[in-house]
Image (cartoon, rainbow over all chains, first blue to last red; front, side, top):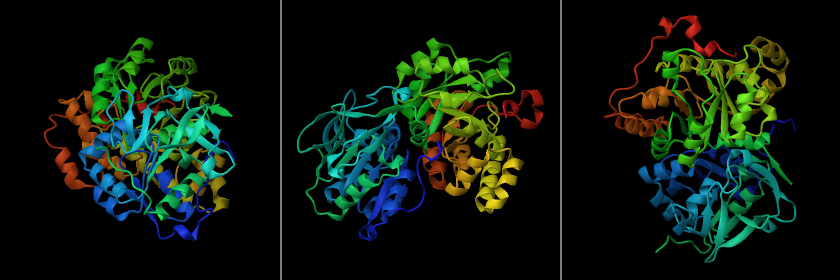
Length: 218
Length: 294
């Protein structure tokens, strides 16, 4: 690939099993288009969720990377939060990448939590500023033996994992991916590469829509 | 293996800004107002473009103290401008750890012939463009994001519209051209051939394209989004208006709901006066920032 070709376009590995699923990408702000493209490449239906009413139509939701302060402010202002809680309480899966992980965390260092759905503590901009942004090969056991290339962009990390949350990946001992019931979150951006394994893993969670459900904090 | 500053993470950084508003600020207080309003980043400057235009003289990179103070005031990304071709200013900005560098026509160009080789930096760059050829030349030099030039500091959207329409029209042409016509089209547009082929393959620009240079109202932001912008830069439009706090929030909401006229009508209420505007036809050619560094 040439330097400017960082992601291919078009379907590569569509799977018939996902064709009845419609997954939403929270389209308040951020890199939602790349997620929708990855979902479509997997063979699933993808919908940009631009209004809270669309949350009722989807079988799962991705909160993309972006600025968590912006997405949180607009998400609250325009009434998206209640719809996201309903979706998760109905057993549908929620996947947050980067800003999405920060929004899903039950605890965020130095600020109030936003959705508080996943039993982790998040630290924003944990590797430093953009100059320190990097890509790295990660070992993610639930995806099999092949390394997974993760893009970390002003990325958050997970500084503690509690409750029923499980660690899915670490880099240099630091937790960068976790799952609790139907909530999945990564510090990095799987949507910026052609590796669809994490999106397929999420679609498998959507197929098992009746799995144990996460609940909002009492 | 850990690799910093790859084109993927530079371009990815710009993709995270999609659908957002980036605001020019000159001090930490303004930066906090921008962050609270929902800006996805701030551009740290010594003067906003309309003041640069009014004061004349040589406009340079902002001083390190001013940039650092803004970086310490907010958690959102901080961008800063260097002069076109002034790679030493860019090196300083990278050393200061700004999140994005704008090689900008708003400042007085340092080099009237060459731009910075942006591939050699780990910090990503955004550059202005008035047409597809200019956008692809900047991407060829390593820009990970482009924006329309518009005419900065005028509060007049006409040039941003002209540039966005021209880019979109030329994109449509590139995408529908048969392969054998692409080399001639590359010659016509003065665009790098390989990148023009990539445009045809992707059906769009290979990096995000924001609108800049003249946005003063929520409706201006909505107009540019409907014309195909991936997001909005507001220079003088916010802090030169009567009520920056309200206007900043309104432009952020208008950018999100760009195709919902009812909502645009609501957010456009009670904003007070917009920044004063300038008729582009009254600007002397030498006063047109967009002609710098093409």
